Length: 443
Image 1 (cartoon, rainbow, N blue to C red):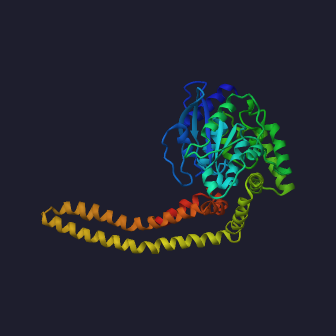
Image 2: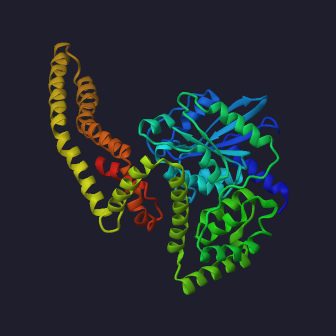
Image 3: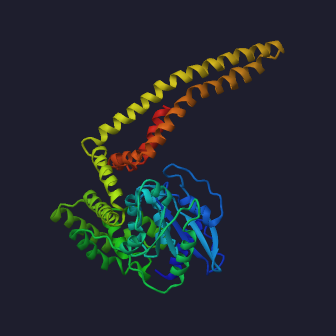
């Protein structure tokens, strides 16, 4: 494949994100991070745009684009969807992954929540497998300080092998340092050496065996060969579609590649008893273990005690034996409170609208309004409005605050984790359990 086709594919992806390069000297920066880390607030602070910010997972489903200048250089900032990983289990993950892989931004700024650093490092480590031009912003440092959490950012930078900047995007703290670091990264001609994830021997040998087959096809190092091999081995069909879409390379038609992948998978399953599900589980476990190891070294002892307590809770609410029963019990209690609790305000609202309907009917009779007008306005519009408000408003006013409380307590991601395995069986994602709960409420 020629460079022209590659350039066309990369331009197509940038166009899909509204990244119009007015000059070849424009620098494209991708802004990535978990939901609720202050990523959109940082985007607004850097670009001056007033993008809507929200406090719910998956809020940034598409992307936002803005520009800023520093030291005479124009930067185009692309706010990627908030996501917990790049394993393409959802639309958000696939959009973020494709832009980092094929959009070829000059740098990626990862925004992490300093109050739950370990969980945020999982995404960072996956991005570092794709590109080394990464800067980590440890955001919400004011929240961390209030909770007694201390993070040694200098040591964290040493462990990760990249620049780490403590920030508070809401107050603009650390943003000037971020701009200086971006300028240094773009202009400096040096090779970065970020941390590498250590997978077990079986996975490493399988990747080493596949890399020489993949490397000649993905010419000019358009993708990291080891990362691509890993994605192909764990059965990620979406990466094959993205490679064909943006690089015009159809890996599925390359018999030698697909044959080799199937051969390696068979060997893993027969010799080491590692099937696709086990392989992905081991990959994810390696990422989590690496994040935990780093976090243990850079967070203060006070936080370690809290984390130990959190882990004890996680072992219960996400365990195979108790995770699902606890989730069903808790959701059942919420639905019961919602339905039973909504009966009282619903009755009050219904009585209020019924009384108003009688008053309005008397008024229409007093002015001798025609029957058809009374039917359209009172029996049609007003009565329908009254029914909708009486039936829908009270449950929503109870249900959504309760769900917000679960989100603030960090339980919603655990629900998604508990149900992810079951939802994957029907080609869905664990996070869809949350929308399922809302649909159930409406029914």
